[in-house]
Image (tube, rainbow, N blue to C red; front, top):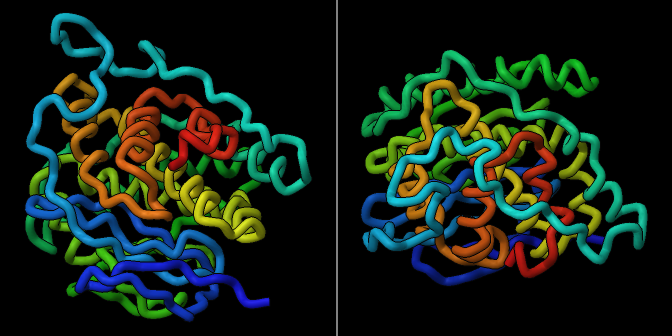
Length: 316
């Protein structure tokens, strides 16, 4: 029985269905643009096509987004363990069938988010040369941090390649994909950073870190089997849980990055960035994207980003 293809927004803004079926999951990081945010193409599950999301304008209202911990405008320390969000409630579907348990109780969730050392400092980048330098250094740092964690638990821990492309599309083993950045799980996985990644990184200093962390978060999901289990469900809600978990993991890596101190300013900028997304059935609402991204700043384990145990209202 053929799988249902993901809807995606065409460049003109219309919605259509694609019949393309990829050999592996393609997932895109959220990339917000200065004059319009492009929250990237996603084929969120195994054997699914990409989703190209339209653009939005970043919020300018300084009150947008949740307030970080601390009183009187004081900068919070690195936020791990400081006024953490509520513990995730176990969803009502728990235990109903082996599939729900395979997603909710995946051993990946037991892993501790490692400390990232030697990563590049946050910076805005505006050229392909700057993007390549920043993104390669970021991916090298992320993979070096996760390698011993994955090896200790028996997961595939080989370094995945990083590629760069101009324009809005790239040819991958998973097909020709349109989007600002892509993760393709075929042949062990690879990450592709496109020219349109610059639309976010020109105004948000953590833009490249967010993209790299999001894409590597999808790689973690792939090696742990979450992709294949989610594909058996194949609903928009399960795709949102996959996407929101990757966003949460991206910000968990930022919070564990020695090159980043999570000040109130960074917290609020991150909140605005996360709330400047286009709402759709796959990537989620502004509230959900913001909630899971900011939750990641407090995460100490992958389980703190376990979207699979959250109630449906938290993954809208």
